[in-house]
Image 1 (cartoon, rainbow, N blue to C red):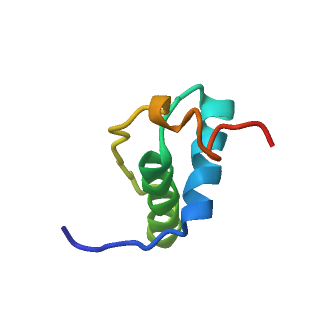
Image 2 (image 1 turned 30 degrees about the vertical axis):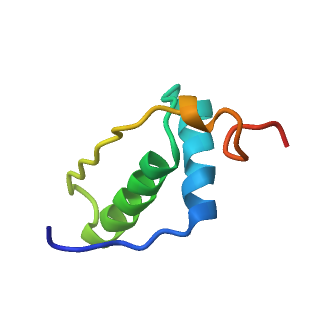
Amino acid sequence: MDEIVPVKTEDAKEMARRIAREEGLFAGTSSGANVVAAIEVGKRLGRGAKIVTLMADSGLKYLNTDVYKER
């Protein structure tokens, strides 16, 4: 591991909702955090960089939480 990228919980939740809505990938908060961090790293590395992240959870356990409840 080279780096830990801190991500705010609310940003992770919003990204989980966004990737579900826009990409059809039903994932949880930790996956949302992974994507937020990957985007941040990608911005730093610049155009042409290849960034990979893993989404190792599903959104099932988040259905009754504020991540996926209607607002």
